[in-house]
Length: 77
Image: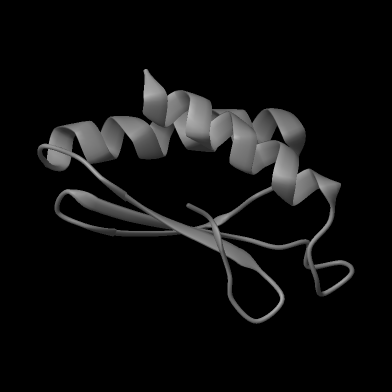
């Protein structure tokens, strides 16, 4: 469900409400911080869009795919 969008991968996540979306953002932020790899996160009510790329190379690297897998696992819980 990740899409390639101009040198990044991006996915939309939809939740039941704002509280669930916010909990996902917090858990995602903790996972990203542990990897020292920080996504762009956009939120409107129950929708969260995550955009991943590696700014230092201005493209997609294994770090992006690794974090995407972690975010998918958080979402699946």
